[in-house]
View 1 (cartoon, rainbow, N blue to C red):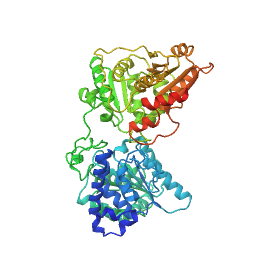
View 2 (cartoon, rainbow, N blue to C red):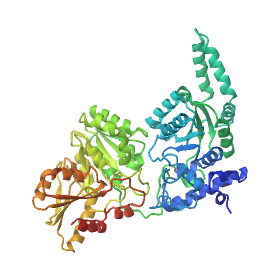
View 3 (cartoon, helix red, strand yellow):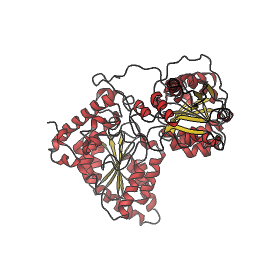
Length: 614
C-alpha cells in the first residue's frame, strides 16, 4: 500500500510517520501527473505546491481553519488530501470534480475561485467574520507571485494591514516575480523571526524611540531602512504585515516547523515561500508556461497526445493582427498576463516595442488602452471573455463614454469546456450590448474573423470581436482583407416556416439544423447576424413581415444578448421569438461537445429543440 492510500482526510497525516511525508509528496505528484495527462488541466502550479499543501494540512485544522486558494491552479494536492483521492481521476470531466476549488464540492473548499488576485480580500473577510463572532479559528490565504500583479491583491493587503486582524498570507513565489533570496542565512533569520524573539525586540525598540519626541522618529525610519538589507518584503512591512521568509517551499519539515511557530502570531503575517513550477516532472520544470494549462499528453515524453488540429481561431486572429500591424504602425497590443493564451505572443516577437503585458490587471489594461487610443494609437486589448468582466467599469467610463477606438479581441467566448463556470464566456454579448457607443461583432468562421479584425480598425469608437476557443473550420480564406458593412447581417438561406437568427460560430450549426428540418418538410431560413450592435433592425423587420417565428441562436446567456435584442425589435408585433442559448445559470464544466449537446447548440439537438418550438 502506498503512503497516499492511507490518506483519506487531512487528519490522517498524523497517523503516518513524519519521515514518510516526503514519500507522500512523490505519490501525490504521480497522481496529479497521471490524471492531468488523461484529462488535461493546470499541472505546473499544482506540482509546485505539493509540500506546502501537505504542511498546511498538517499544521492547521481544516475545515475549522480556513484556507483560501488564489485562482486554484495550485490546489490539486489540496483536493487529493481532502477526501477526493478516489474521485480525482474524474478531474475536469463532465459530472466529475472541478479543476478549481468549489464550495459546493467540499467543506474543505472554503471559497470558490477561478479568477486571480481574490484570496487576500476573501481571507480578510473570513478573519473579520471570525472576530465579530468571537471565534478563534485560523485563516490562511495562498497566493502566487503572478496573482500579486493584480491590483485587487494590493487592495486586500492594505486593508488587512489597516484592520490588523489575525491572518496568514502565504506568498507562493515560483521565481517569476519577487526576490529569490533563499539560503542558509535567510532561513536562519526566518527561524529567528518565527521564534518571536526578534519581533518582540523590534516592538520594544519601536516603542522606545516613539517616546523621543524630537529625533526618535528619524532614528526609527533609518532602522527600518537598514532592516531591508537583511530582509526582503519591506513593502509588506510598510503595509502593516509581519514579513517572514523567504523559505524553501519543497522542504516539508521546515515548512511544518515554521508554520507551527507562526500559527498563533497576532496580526497579519506574510510568509514568503519559494517553489518551483512543475517540481518533480522534468518536462513541466523545463517548460512551465506550456504546462500551466495543458490538454492530454504522453507522460513519458511530455508531448501532446492530441493529433494536430486545424489552426485555432486564436491563431487566425494572431496571424491577421500581425498582417495588419505591418501596414499600420499605430496598432499596438495590450495583454493581461495571457500573451500565449490570446495568441499575441507572436505579435510581441514581431513588434516588441508595440506589445504591452500589464500583468493580471484587466481594469488597468482597459484604461491603459484607452490612454493609448486618446494618444493617437490603435490599441487592441486581447483578453479572455471571462476575464474582461473584471474591466467592466473601465470599458464603460474610460473607453465607451469617451468614444475611444479601442478594439477588444475577446477570446474564449462561449463554452470553453473543462475549466467550467469560472471560465465560460457566457456573458460578454449581454454585458457589452448595454454599453452605448459599442460595436459588437462575432464571426461565423475564421474567414469572417480576419475581415472583422480589418473592419474593427476602421471604426472610430470602441469595438468588440468575440470568437471561441478551439479549432477553426478549415474553410478557404480570402487572400485580401476587406471591411464589412457595419451593422449588416447576411441571409444565408430562405425559409418561410421559421427563421433562424444565429450569431458567431452557432451559424454553422444553424445551417446544419436547417438541413435536418428540411428533411422533415420544415422550411427554415438562416441569417448570419454578424453584428449584435448595431443590429440589422431593418432586415429583421422585413423577415418578420413574412415569417412569424424567429429562433435566435447564440452561445451566450439567454438574458440580454441576441434573444433580448430581437425581442425588443419585434415587441409590438405578433412575431414569436424563441431562444436557443445558454441558460440563466452558471454552466458546469465538461467538454465543449457534451455541453453543446446538452444546451441544444449542436445541429441534432438544435433541430429537435426547434421542432418543439414549432
